[in-house]
Amino acid sequence: LRYLKHLQIGAFGLVSISEDFMRLGEENKLESLDLNSNNFNGIPSILTKENFPKLKKLDLLACHRWTVSDLQKKDDYEDGIGLYINTATDNSLRNLLLWDTLEELRLSNNYIEGQIPDFTVGQDGVEAWSEADVAAWGGDTIKNLVGRPKIMPNMKRLSLNLNFFTGDLPHWMLYH
Image (cartoon, rainbow, N blue to C red):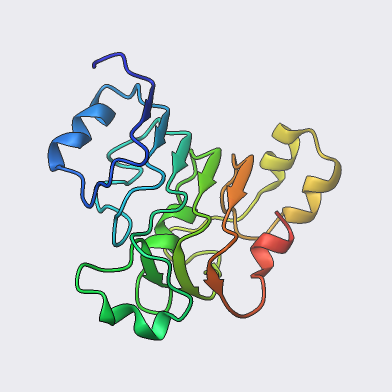
């Protein structure tokens, strides 16, 4: 599968991904990975920019084992409820949002609770939009981003709906 660019393994009931799976990113060819409707209890740890540097699309839509409306009962399920993240204690979502090569990220219809992460320029490797970025994009309204956190600079589609978010939208998202 050395030349594989697009892989879809949706609705297989996967609960984990083997470390060998990283080989698909070694050749820097894999551009889209669709793992929707599987049974992961969190974001598989091998799904990182370092392991998949050319990835443009990551789909983890609807990865749940059970339909749960009250997350306080999540521990009642011995094998987990599915893709669960509490943003107060787990940086998985934050790490995905910092993955700057992604153009599409689908995380809708999971069990993500807490606030959408906010970012500060100079922390965790977060850079600011620059005048050079404005020039590269042709100016116009992007000039309002100068000095703001440069989060998901290539993102064309972000899907986070049908989760359990609380709080305000972070400022970086309001200016995206």
